[in-house]
Length: 149
Image 1 (cartoon, rainbow, N blue to C red):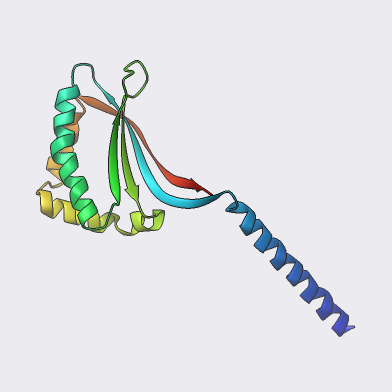
Image 2 (cartoon, rainbow, N blue to C red; image 1 turned 135 degrees about the horizontal axis):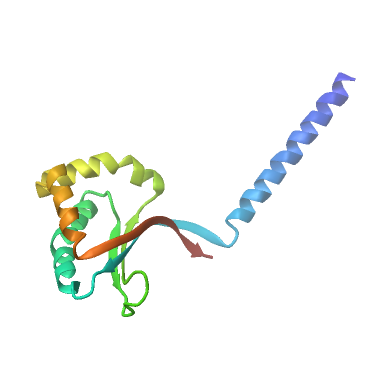
């Protein structure tokens, strides 16, 4: 009787393992998971394009280049829309290796940027308030890139 129970149990475990392997294969059947992108939607206030582009070309570019140099970020892109009627007219994209590296490096990246730029919490808050006069941050979403096979 014990032998039959062991046989049934081992058969059940084998079937479950086979099902788990087939489910895993189906999840990544059509794509390979890629980089993680932070996507920030921005609404630039009317007539403030030059002021915001100046900020992007100086402070944001400097911080992004430091993050890339130190391995906290892979790349970044800025996309400007021509249609000013929608809720947002600019995307700021930041590419990271993975969610794990993004979370792991968050505090270290903040410290490196603080030292390199000399911007402390008070200056950072003041800069954010100044930029709020020329643009609105509509939201930020982190998304995984899907590389089709």
